[in-house]
Image (cartoon, rainbow, N blue to C red; front, side, top):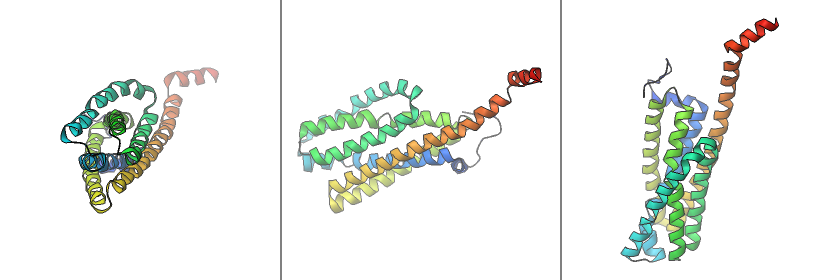
Length: 223
């Protein structure tokens, strides 16, 4: 994706000087840290807390797949009209699932329903943030995409590491609680990123309107 005009970034980290980009990348960092702090350790949770056998465990994890496909199918129309709301709601809904797994972890049917909800909300998250990126950096989407991928990969590694440390030291409650806290913080930053993007667009829209040929002609006629 070639950059438009002269605004290409030789150093992708310079994109973080743009306030909406900084908020958005921080939101993505916390979202994927929270997601993989929990998701990486679902198997030991299901074996030790829900106490399912291997076949049931496989079926429970399988449920995440179809629900994720459904989430990807449903998110498209929503992103056209409610992008900020969607990227804000996704981590908050995932945080609610994380807390619910702590409360209802002993019930196979409850866990099955919660994992379906997890797939429904977590799988479309990259789609939502990819759309956000193209709207926030339409002039530099290639460099922004590289920064986004690096942020997500770092978040996955750090989230899985911290989740494992917490799981080994204090059990699944600490890991899932940490996941919920990270996801809630990610939702807050996603909302802030949307607000900052709206504020950044207002001067551009005003400038484009003031400098439009039709407006200048109308002003000259009035004079």
